[in-house]
Length: 264
Image 1 (cartoon, rainbow, N blue to C red):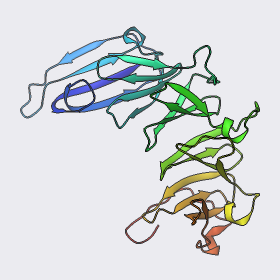
Image 2 (cartoon, rainbow, N blue to C red):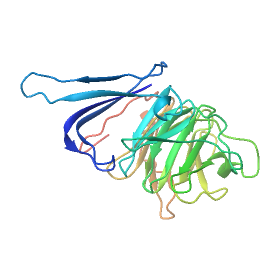
Image 3 (cartoon, rainbow, N blue to C red):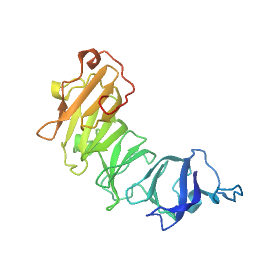
Image 4 (cartoon, rainbow, N blue to C red):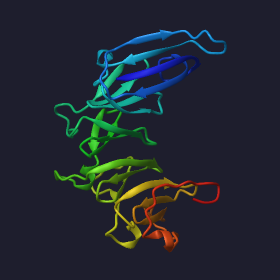
């Protein structure tokens, strides 16, 4: 079920000219029938508002909503147990695998949606695959097709960690970190960072707790066995910077971080 709280006052472009002061989207995974509740607050300085609830009767592809995103064009996107849904403030359009598509989603349950700087969506499905969704062509492309071209083998991913500088950073379940281009999805065009590789791409552990891009565009990766910092080389590829003190580079389970004006 999807519940939207709307309070009048501010115009949000991209949602059909509707007037809002606040839009709070509450996600709930328990199936529920449609209801509309309109209330007027009489207390001074409090605006009028209404609560709207949407379900499959309004075009939502499934009652269970798992994730949400507002994209750069102003559309709301919702991941459900049956594909992704775009909402323009009036109606839903759902997207999922269709017969004849070159690539099929292995599981239509979507657990995460991230938008990159080129306007593409990256969605994490329940089967452990991550797909790029081209909003213009309305097609899904699996990341495993870049890593294992022409094979049915796939990487099990856990999380989309970030999108910056034309790249997408992806956390796997057991194989460390993958970095792929936002625009070039040609086979083999990716970088793999993990524990058992050469020093410039090596992580202290394949168990990743966080990824952070600092103010100098360096990538900090906290793992169960230490901290790693990647910096962009002249080739454009991120490599180990070697600046992490030995005391925390290994044998430290780092689970959180914070950055101020001078240090991490």
